[in-house]
Length: 229
Ligand SMILES: CCCCCCCCCCCCCC(=O)SCCNC(=O)CCNC(=O)[C@H](O)C(C)(C)COP(=O)(O)OP(=O)(O)OC[C@H]1O[C@@H](n2cnc3c(N)ncnc32)[C@H](O)[C@@H]1OP(=O)(O)O
Image (tube, rainbow, N blue to C red; front, side, top):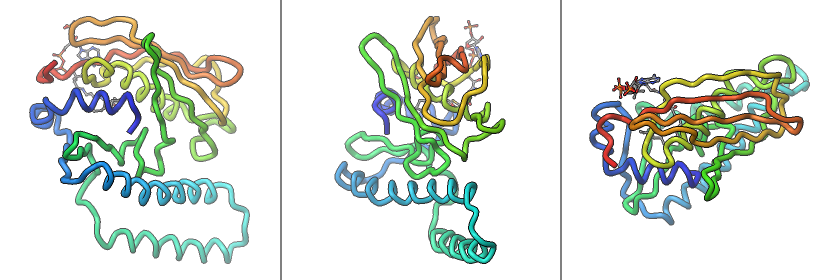
């Protein structure tokens, strides 16, 4: 998990039971140490990368019909193999006995989620948070441009992580202004806390390509009433 999110989770863990009760967040404690977590990371990460590659290849392939049918059967067989033993529901947020956390199903950062871009949030001492990401064909909305909902995902996650750098925060309201289309390719998003009012934290941010800002965002993030400081 990225550094910012790990910090948030460390703040959340003491309040996990009450948050679980109030928000039905799925927390799971796993009796494993960090070397086992690393082993699993090395096992599942490449699988997810391969699935991501498959998604992109599926969109862009121009091979013959017979190859499409062949690959369809192979992919269906691979999915059936993975389904032979699986979780009842979603992955949730898990933590090891040492307190390391992993949200591997998360739509923004999940190590086991091929739909996740994936995002990794960095921050500096001034309170600036940022993420750099390359969004390719699977994230297209208007031709050649990033889907507006994907821009929202990136900004929601970044602004949420920024808001949660002090205390855990949920997105209450997220306002976006799409100034121009966001081209597929390399992008950078930045965010900063602009106001703190009790349980409410206001965060402003932007999504940019090499030519400048494409989307402006403002989010109001609310701390769960039961979370402890
Ligand atoms: C915690 C686990 C997370 C782990 C993730 C770690 C990674 C981090 C990255 C995560 C990134 C991804 C993040 C995600 O994807 S978070 C997922 C998307 N968001 C949600 O699912 C949130 C759903 N909503 C709720 O749970 C509740 O409605 C919340 C908690 C938001 C407020 O319900 P609560 O009952 O607590 O509120 P209150 O009535 O006591 O009001 C309190 C104050 O707040 C003001 N207010 C209330 N609602 C809103 C609103 N919608 N906009 C603006 N303001 C609002 C209200 O006026 C009042 O202000 P004041 O009158 O005092 O001035």
